[in-house]
Amino acid sequence: SRGAIVTSVQELLIDLFPGKIIGITGNSDNEVFNFISSIAYASGYECIFDNDINKPLLTRLYDIDENSILLMEFNEKQLLGLNNSPDISIITNMTPNYNPSFMTYDEYEECIKNMFRFQKSDGITVLNADDELVCNLKSQVLSNTILYSESKKLDNGIIYDENMIKLCKDGVRRHMMKLNSNEKKQIKNICASFATTLSFCDLDTQVKAISQKIMEHIY
Image (cartoon, rainbow, N blue to C red):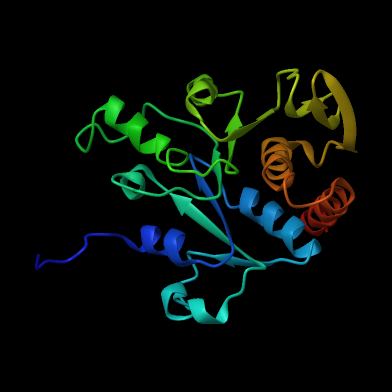
């Protein structure tokens, strides 16, 4: 009857944050979140990064409203024992290069599944279809799944094909934006950001925000 609840900062943020939470795991760079935040800002949302050490989130949750989006990065250690999941989860890749002294591969895979294990029925899990281990998780996601790919012609999801980012639904592919040679190094990040923001941003806003962000990188 007397004791303390064992939790983590990540669990507290998922439980207490008043807005939408987007989480990512895998060997990704910050560009995925940079593209996502650009789209969200253009759609009228405030974006907050959980790794901003100058502004501890737990101390200012009361100043944050429901029109905010929290962007959280997770590694397998942070996912270990997690009892809740982000509203939208992105899994970019799974790697056999986990620390075997810390956990077995099966334990590592179970940690990754915590990204979507506790999602509500309206939750969304975004999976990289080009990573076989990640793509195989699709059958275990009980909420909604969106795939993205740089090399596969998916029937549903976001793909890159013939120099074009395309939105696929039931085999019908809609052109979203064309990429030139300077932009192709960001293909995976752009596909992931489009897939992640489909549920709360319209296509025109997505394309304009991504185009502007790419121009900032070039110039």
